[in-house]
Image (cartoon, rainbow, N blue to C red):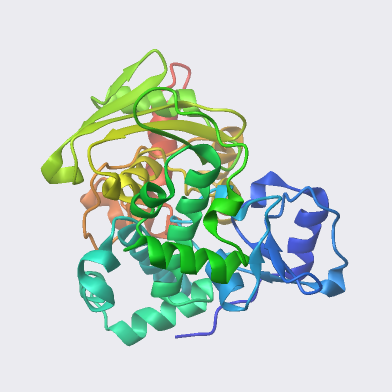
Length: 370
């Protein structure tokens, strides 16, 4: 496998100076003088260029020994499940990025908890060793380290946004025990998780309510209309779904609506808190929260067919499936018509988005017909 292209330090630093929200979650800034890592939008004073390094993921930052910033809270950044790599390069790099994207979504669904790394690699059609190499190449850390970072990310959100007892936070974020939960936070933050809880909101009735971030722009109304059009329940701007014990690991209900700022508000009422990571992963997929509009424009902005369409509506999102399948092609790269699939080869790894833009253009009343 070819070595991945490095992140452009200069481009990252410009985004940090501008606090550009479009880059939130695409990389993290590690400050050598303080030992912490931050989001590009961190409100703290911008460090000198010579005092920082940039990494592809929170897991890579933590593997290097950096601690999460308590001010910008990296766990609130938009998700990176739809990983596509930071630099547009050839087919081999894009193909392995697709594999990492699929693996991240499986990890969020609990793949490592249920069958370990060997089973995850089997589902992806590769060996354990090769999967570890791909993760280190794209995300700078092993699959196990990435999974641990994502558990901490959810636990930190629960500490800040809910009043769940510590034992329930540990359970809901995927830690096997309260002891392991406490030890992880002590090692990472130098303090127990209870010391990080401040300003959490009171629970409004039953269930857990959290905010899930997205990268701007984001056309939520268009996405809600698309979800309603395919048969999902959308009433008064609120998407909802009844949970099934066999399919979701718990009975209950989930609701999603617009939240404050660049975020959705998600309420989950579940009989088993252990199912929360899986449910939130499914909400992220349905609402395409891992999508990176800047990366899409980077790859398709110059396309003679799609460039103008993408530029006109960069906030469109792809309605995702609730249940993840083990298909060899990532959902973002699936072309709907097998008979014309070869014609869309140049749009990889964004063929599903290409189909979305073409379909919407055809549905416009004033669209030009050939």
